[in-house]
Image (tube, rainbow, N blue to C red; front, side, top):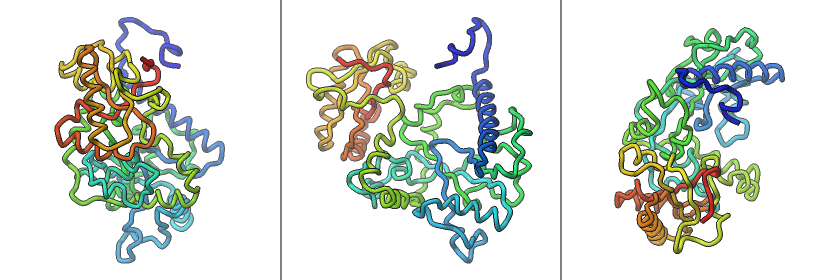
Length: 371
């Protein structure tokens, strides 16, 4: 379903899509809180899917002002909930204002990315394992709220901020707004440019300069010191569920919704790529915007090779040449299977300056058709 299914289209009517987007968020959050309160749930978190919560490691230092007697490590199952319960029961805390740490899209050495990650998982596909360099600046805080202390029926649908809903419970008093002084931290990742641009909504208008510009803003801002706070989760997760279940549960991680698996297409690229998309929207919109490509041209994708970087790049170059010869656009090499050399291949592509032409990407399912 989409807007046209639920709402009438009024030609000529000036609709502020950003205000519509915000109003929907506010309505959803208010209803969500009321529903979870009805189900007698305890805590609700106001974060996004590219954000991950961790207990501030400073809470484990006895000499630090943030020290807490109950501060379980991230590799302990249920560590966050255990921390929340202890704080609520012993200190009466009903809301945490969490400082948010913004990570840059600056790469780290592959050896560091793959540290303590088993060979059957591709560490480069995990936000929490690939991006290790925080940006110098911090962005706005978010809340975790104890629902049982709130009368959700009194929450208006037009509250001030969708990440800090109940201000009287979550004001500044006793809570830090910056990650270094926050008991709980929100680690926010941009991911790759394709992942960052996938969520294409009304927030690109007005005060937001656009996701592409935001991505490039943070590139080069990464600290020289990397953060490994979140890394222990992967080893603990595998230990808890087992190897085979971990592989099943983590299958497709890092892939945006709607991607087409290259495994569904017979053969690999030889005379022509595996599939064609009739739109040139997402993967190529940056080059379209700069006037380097013509609108309306087909976007073609090749099946990503699983062997060494040289062969993979040669294959992508052949696909790009095929697309150029046939007045098409090369969208990238596509696969949802494990690609052991993807990270090193991307580094080599960037080293020779071809990162805007040769990419790992897949078409949207609704746009793809076999050729």
